Length: 261
Image (cartoon, rainbow, N blue to C red; front, side, top):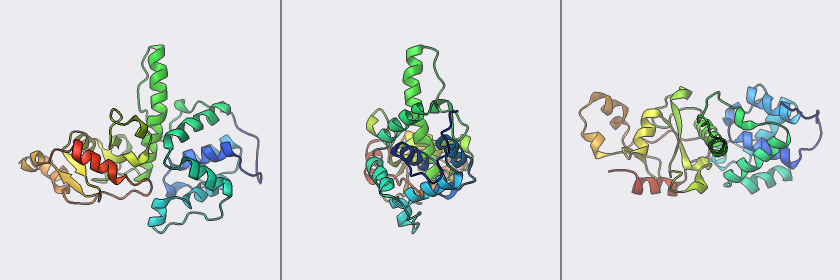
């Protein structure tokens, strides 16, 4: 890993801010602390102290609309550059991913070989062309997954299951329908494997008020497991994310096009 020279007290440049925002999206806000291993990792990459990096992540929290709705202000002593980078990339997360990869490459770091949570997303095929294509896809999928799971503090938004290997970042509008939203965490829900499958197959939906709907097929089932794990959640609200609330129009699209009433 290439590590920059110490920059204590030196103003943050644009590339550093881009990386800070990239990591901000992928770390639960409550864990943007100086003792968090991922904050320490970013500090090593940038040649800054963990406390300095933690403060910068807190600065981005000052612009986060979801945090603001919860009465969380972040760190308000931010710079004009902080706000400019947030304004440029907020809502344009695919562009942030692409630019962050350039910054990491300039630092001599292949981010595709590193994982924040220790979990692989895709197996890399043997063919050279396939490896290249899947490698690019994995960068976007990793960012999407980490950002969505971090938003829900690694809990299924339906049942609160909290074992990472059982959690998926589920696209509300599938890639095949809208590739522009492939890296957008506002197009995602953190779901356990069971509820991810139910959501994908139209058995479960979330309306634009974030209330769960269950299909007639599941509600008619007499199976005790189905009743307890799926039907019992009907008309209940999902777990609210701490960041990246799902867009109502995305939920409406899924309800109208995937859900089977």
